[in-house]
Image 1 (cartoon, each protein chain N blue to C red):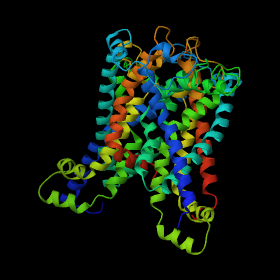
Image 2 (image 1 turned 180 degrees about the horizontal axis):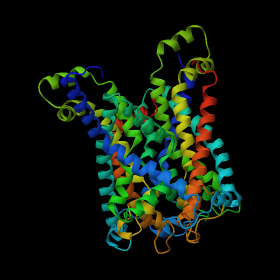
Image 3 (image 1 turned 90 degrees about the horizontal axis):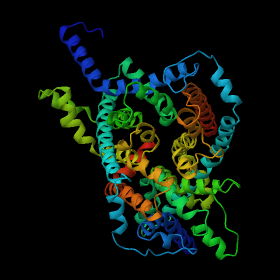
Image 4 (image 1 turned 90 degrees about the vertical axis):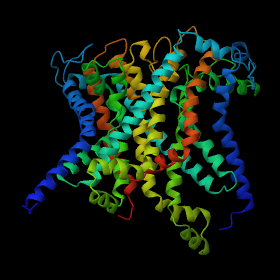
Length: 275
Length: 306
C-alpha cells in the first residue's frame, strides 16, 4: 500500500484543477454582482469586479418592482415551515413503523417504499389538480402542505429508530411515562443526528425548489426567490449586475446552512444511499 | 392475540391507539397528495379537461393516442431515454472518480471534499443563470466565447438551437451541480470497506486496477445500485435547469424538451392547457420510469452474490 510519489502529485494536481472549476461559478456570481453592466459586456472577459460597493445591492433591494425582499420573506416562511413540519411528521411516522409490526404497519411501509420509487415531481400535474380543487393556489398552504409528507424522510427515521434500544423506552414506561411522553423526552433527543441530517437536506431542497412554487405562486406576492430569479432571466428591464446580486442574496442562506451544517448534510446524504 | 385477559386487550388497544396517533398525519398526507392525485390522474387521463380540473367529456384512450402521435411528445421521450442512457453512466463515473481521487488525498482532504460538495447547496435556477449569462453566453463577452476567440476560433451561439452545443451547456451544468452529492454516497460506501482487504490484496501483489476491479467495485455494489437508481429517477425528472437555461421571452424552444417540460407546457402553457392530456402523459412517464428502474435493477444484480 505505498502509493507512488508521482501518483500522489498527480492526484493533488487533478484535485486542485477540479477545485478551481467547481468554485469558479461562485466567484462569477460574486464578480457579476459587483461589476457594472458595461464591464460585464465588454468584448473581453474581465476577471475582476469593478464596482465593489453596495450601489447595486441598494438598487435591487430598494426596487419594489423586482420583489426580491418580498420573495425572500416568502422563501424563509416556506423553507422553515416545510423543514419543521417534514421532520415532525416523518419522525412520528418513522417511529410508528419501527415500533409496531402489525399488518397495517406493513401495508403503510409498503406504500412509503412505493412512493420512493415514483419520483415526486413526476406527479406534479395530478397534485396540482388536487391542490387547485382545494382552492390553495397562491397560498402558503398550497406552497407548503403538499410537500411535507416525505416518504424518504419517514424511511430514514424508521431505519434510525429500528436501532434504538428498547430498554430505554421500557424504563421510562416503568417510571409512568406514556408513549407520547417517552417519544418526545427519550427517543427524539437520542435521534438528533438524524433530525439534523433530514432537516438540513429538507431545508436546502425547500429553499432551492422551483417547479412547485412556480405552479402555485400565481399571485406575484407569493413568489419565492427562485421563481423571481427565474423570471429575471426572461425579463427585458433588468441588467446583469442586478440579476446576479439577486442570485448572490439567494445563494447566501443556503451556503451559510451548508457551511455550518455540512457534517449533518454529509451524514444525511450518506444515509440516503443505504437501503 | 390469544391472551384474552382484560389487561392484555387494554394494552393492545392502547398500542393500536398510539400507532394510529403517530402514523396518521403522514398517512393522510401520503394518501391525499400522492395516491389520490395519482388515481385521479389516471381517471382524468380518459377525459377532456381543457382549462379545468374537472373532466368534461369521455375520450377513452384518445389522450394516449394523441400523445403517441404527437411528434413533440415522442421526440421528448426518445430524447430523454437517450439522455438517461448517457447521463446516468457519466455522472456515475465522475462521482466515483472524485470519491476515489479523495481517497488518495490526505492533506486538505476536507477542503477538496467541501469544494466538490458545495454546488449541492446551489439551486438549478442560479446555476442556469451563471451558465447562460456568463459561461455560455452566445455573445462575444461569454467566458467560453472569449476563450474561443482568443484561440482564433469562431464564437458559438451555444443555446440558439441551430446546433447541438446546448447539450454541452446542460450536461456540464448538471454534472457540476450533481456529482458532489453522489460522490458523498460513494465515499460513505468506500468507508465501509474493510482496509484489511486492500492490504491482503496488496500483499498478493494485485495492481491498483485489479484491487479496484476485485475488491472495491464488488463491495461497493449496494451503493452503486442506490446511486444508479437515484440517477435514473433524476434523469427523467429533469426540469429546472432545462427550463431556466432554454426558456426565452418568446417561450420554450421546440428542442431539448424533457418530459416534465413537455407536460408543463401542455398542462399549463399558453396553448391547449389540457390537464387530461397532461395526466395521460404523467401515466406514460411513470410507466417508462418503472420499466427502466426494473431493467436497471436486473442489469446491476447480474453477478451479485445473492
